[in-house]
Length: 215
Image 1 (cartoon, rainbow, N blue to C red):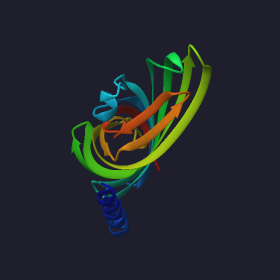
Image 2 (spheres, one colour):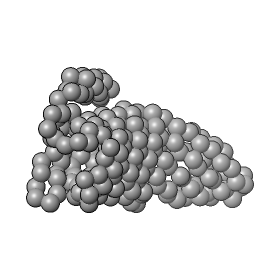
Image 3 (cartoon, rainbow, N blue to C red):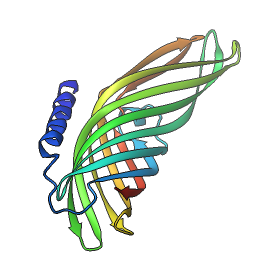
């Protein structure tokens, strides 16, 4: 997976350098920025581990047109969810565990656009890095309460589909769906004999509503 991600990132960067002067007659504004908010859901290992609720997703992107219908885009994103678990151990007794799980990401995406009447549709693919942090609050019947945290960083690839509508020549609104595949997280801790573990990939879907501005 890591080799594939590095190759894809290199290919995207090379495409950006090669095509950065190719935008000839596609409009006055070569750059844009947008912010988005929506929801996400894990679909593989973390879904099986109990993180099956819909969480929140935030994104902020900068994009540049490389050709009339070709865009390279950089995105800073954040996913958040929380879950409660319970169990018991011989030393700690019964316990409840509240996990607060956040994932920050830095992505690069290459998109192709297709005008379709009043809207423009697009699809693309890319790669990036994901920094995941798990903050856990534990309450036990025998040992009292305590907190712990851990983190890990993984690489991943993704595909996107979406569309946008121009409100003015500069302003636009849109919707985007992103599906990601990543390497496996490895978070393994034991605090007060209570296991705090999060092992597996971050595979899943995020859907965001966005508003953007060209410049």
